[in-house]
Image (cartoon, rainbow, N blue to C red; front, side):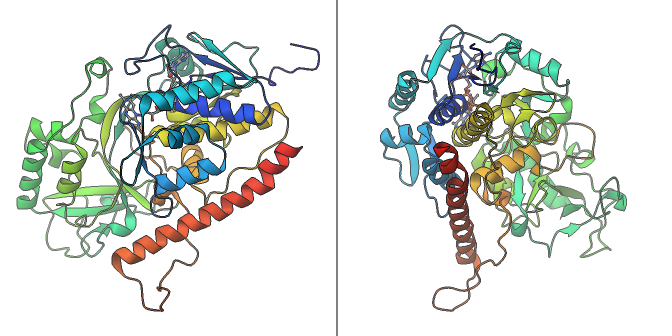
Length: 477
Ligand SMILES: Cc1cc2nc3c(=O)[nH]c(=O)nc-3n(C[C@H](O)[C@H](O)[C@H](O)COP(=O)(O)OP(=O)(O)OC[C@H]3O[C@@H](n4cnc5c(N)ncnc54)[C@H](O)[C@@H]3O)c2cc1C
């Protein structure tokens, strides 16, 4: 280090996956020196097969590319406007996949690896960071993903606390509130308990008769499930997070005494009839647009999940922002641990990016790598960067990770769980569209589509303004 160089002038990025690769590209594009540390091929994960950067470990799809009607398509569009390397490599290696952006996986990873290796400000070092990053690295991004190597995970766990880093996600489905039929469901907390920060009517309750409950239990047991991978079965997970179908298999009444217990609840639409079982949904985000199905983590395949959950009274037209799952995954309790710029509150030289922060998926992980790279570059240049607007896909996802989620009040499994980008994370429109261009009223699916298109248009115009106000000026300075 020269006399004028500071420890934070160089950004050290740990993990050359989707997030780390994008972060390296963004920081270097902003004129900052980067050292990218990737442990493969010296040490492999259970899922990676190559030594290439940004390897896609499973599907070769980056999902929908429809920026007007799909939230992940909108995130693609925003990332392209921000000069994303992941999007550039994906576009250059696209294979036919209808409305989805699918890629030739070898060509894609090779393009990312080549671009990073050829960048004059980026040095790639192969080798595991087997503990906390060196103390003299002042500006670090940890982007080691769902399969973070054990010594680094243990060191992070020690630095935070033992409940702050999870090794398994236990995802309950999340439903868009406006798709729940409130002529069947009702708001009430069990025994009308107010609790800390509650109102006594915090949950949405869906009632089942005995026949409906029996049919539901049969469907859960018969439904097709995904298997745990062999290496996942060695990871301990807690009895508090049992999949609902496993509970159903343990006995016909188990769910009725567990997450579907009807006690302390009165059907507001028909107080004279006691429900045989009740499914409860709890507010999941501060905006109040998303509700999660309490205790409904599951290994059912996505198709059967939708079909079975829509048999629950009140959820027949439910739109799912996220379906349930249970996977090996290393991720932080980010809303508590990270500041708005993704820095660990307990040790701000460490910034986190990618799936470790609690986003889910290739594109989301890369997008959080992108903003982490910009923030790290801003720190290195001592030029603060304003946060992306909450109305953009990037800002909405970042907001969810660093504070938009509502912590559960019950003991048991942790409530912050990984999330894909979806329209429920965006602030509602001040004036949602109500009419078509010809003046006739919008209804049903047309109304939903018009709302999504208006959210997307608002996002892209707000992003352009943010880029003009912050990044062009920053690049010129
Ligand atoms: C089995 C499996 C299947 C998946 N399937 C899909 C799918 O089909 N579609 C989808 O969108 N998402 C899928 N995901 C999620 C996907 O992995 C992530 O969304 C995405 O890859 C996360 O990006 P990331 O950069 O955070 O982590 P990764 O892409 O995993 O990158 C992390 C990198 O850090 C490196 N690393 C780890 N520890 C260290 C260390 N101590 N020192 C140095 N380097 C280290 C790893 O080798 C890796 O290259 C899957 C995940 C798993 C585990």
